Length: 110
Image (tube, rainbow, N blue to C red; front, top):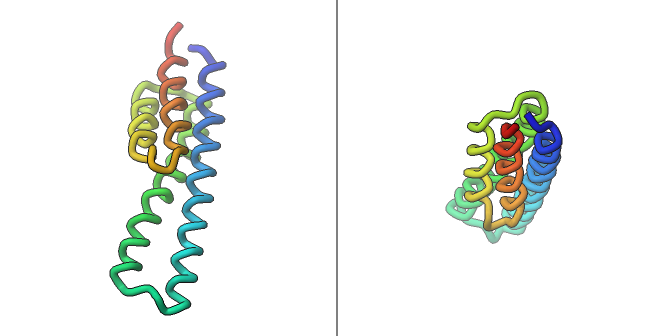
């Protein structure tokens, strides 16, 4: 097991998770201001909640996997990170998750 790759994957996953949560907070603040000003309808809030839930889940998974990869990297964790990265390419922090997943899989090579 190559711990150098595992450490890089852990750091990239942590950075991706933090960026995801920052984007989440910006989206939530923007939606709150829109609702306070009275311009938002119920459907707008529903769409905002759906959009906010995706970065929340990705951010939490990124932070959890950053801890788990450092202690014990597995192929399944790498594949999950790659899938999370593909789903979040719109926000560009998905690239960090994809690279982290690749490094997680590479850390298993001897």
